[in-house]
Amino acid sequence: MIPFLDLNQVNAPYLEAIEKASLRVVRSGWYILGNELKAFERSFADYCGVAHGVGVANGLDAITLILKAMDFPADSEVIVPANTYIASVLPVSYLHLKPVFVEPDPRTMLLDPSRIEEKITSHTKAIITVDLYGRSCEMDQIRNLADRYNLKVITDAAQSHGALFQGKKAGSLAHATAFSFYPTKNLGAFGDAGAVTTADPELAEKVKYLRNYGSVIRYQNDYQGVNSRLDEIQAAILSVKLPYLDTENNRRRALARRYLAELQVDELILPPADRVDEDAWHLFVVRHPRRAEFVAYLDKNGIQTNIHYPQPIHKQKAYAEFNSLSLPITELIHEQVVSLPLNPVLTDEEVSYIIRTVNQFDSQA
Ligand SMILES: *Cc1c(COP(=O)(O)O)cnc(C)c1O
Image (cartoon, rainbow, N blue to C red; front, side, top):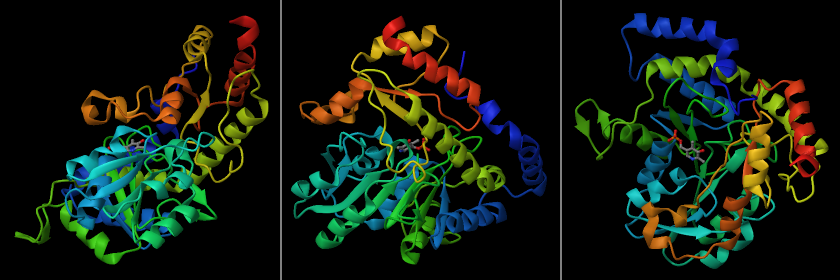
């Protein structure tokens, strides 16, 4: 069986260094908000090409704390992509803001810049862009539009560490960007972890306070904050792995290039091939109108796949108020998408086998 993702294998090359770094923290006697976090925040911000990085507990909190720091009035509207993971949208609801769903470009499956303007009202305050599957959104068009309407742009880059847009890294392209270091992400910790990056010093400072009970100095609380800190062990582990992120992303790009060049089956829709070297290829997402049959065929042939994602947010029970919305592009995508294995430890032979097997789908299924 070719597993979709084997974290043991992904982390194996770094294990010795990670064990050493973890032990250093264990023996240091300092576990929260210390030098390991400071060092990782500095190096991650530098990596992204942005002034400030603030470690938080996870990707969901990163988005929540950005929105909380921006302090929009209750009932303000926030533009969100209809095709994304639910974590991109939940923070909008937590803060009593209103998510306004925008359909994706069917080609990229990302927020369609040409469909945003018609959804902007006098209550709109921000646009959340999500670099879903690892590809950066069309940030030039989105930033221009946001500037014209005086809106903030927040990017959910939980899947796009190291992705580029016009030569600039994810994390430097929006007013503020949220990252997750969940173990399966392109840069993954050994537990939960996240970060906010921004060029805005005041926003960075406010997120720093908010993640630690709103505390400006010890026992002086200027905001009603939360407990959302990135601990020293996770920070130390992330510092070990960060220097290898570009190498790993380049391996992902090489594998994606092979898939794009060699996969060829009737009715199979491949992801866009126009920005292969800018995309971070967190996932390689194809579409097939007979998905169930396609997935069963791959499974029978020893290839594990995944579906990102099976049910749109507006159809979830948790969002009953939107269940009657019709978002046909998003709904069709959720019926057809399937993610093939793509990760830095996938071998050339495994990729050849996957390509050969996929290409025989119609004759063998
Ligand atoms: C993983 C993910 C998140 C949430 O990150 P957590 O660290 O699990 O909170 C948010 N958005 C997207 C697109 C993700 O893939």
